[in-house]
Picture 1 (cartoon, rainbow, N blue to C red):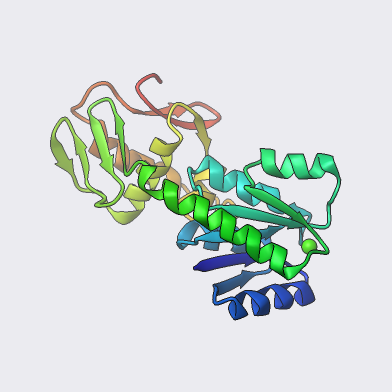
Picture 2: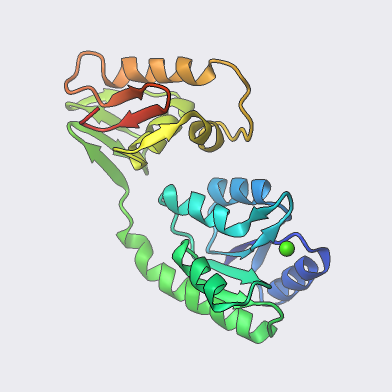
Length: 228
Ligand code: CA
C-alpha cells in the first residue's frame, strides 16, 4: 500500500511516517501544498493523508478539490486540528473521504486508512479508461487517440493537454489551470507556450473534422466539447 502524506509540522510528519512504515505502508512525505499536489497527480497512491493548514496559507482542501476536478479519485483522509463540525463537514464536502482530528490515536488512523483502501479497491475497475466526445476517442490506458476512426499521433505533452481538456469538457479551462495541470508551473512564465501547444493540438484533432471540439473562449481560456 502506497500512502502520500502531506503535512508541514515536522514532528507530526515524523510520527505519521514512522508509524505508517511500521504498519508496512510505503510512505512518501511532502511538506507543502505545491509539492503535495504534484506528487498526488504524478504518481499512483492507494491513499493520501492531507493536513489542512499548510504553509503559505494553503488549505489542504484545495489539493483535494484540484484532484477531484481532475477526476482523481484517490481516497483522502483529512487530518486536521480544525475540529468543529462545520470544518469536518466542509472537509468531506470538498472531496475528502474521511476526516480525523488531531490529536488522534494511531490505531484509529490505521483502521480508517484500511477502511478507505478497502472501499477504493472495489471501485477501481469501474473507473472509465476511455473518453469519447463526438467521433473523438481517447484511450487513457494505451494513450491511443482516434478521430472518425483515424489514429492521431500526439506528443506526450499534447496528450496531457488533450486529456485534461477532455476530462473537463464543456467547462472553461483557464491558462492558469493548464499551466498547473499540464505544465506543472505554479506561476505564469509569460510565454506563449500554451497558445503554441493549443494551436498544434487543434490542427491535429480538429482540422478536416467536424464539429470543431477545441474552442477559444476570449479573455477566459479554452473549452473542449461539441458546443463552443
Ligand atoms: Ca499544519
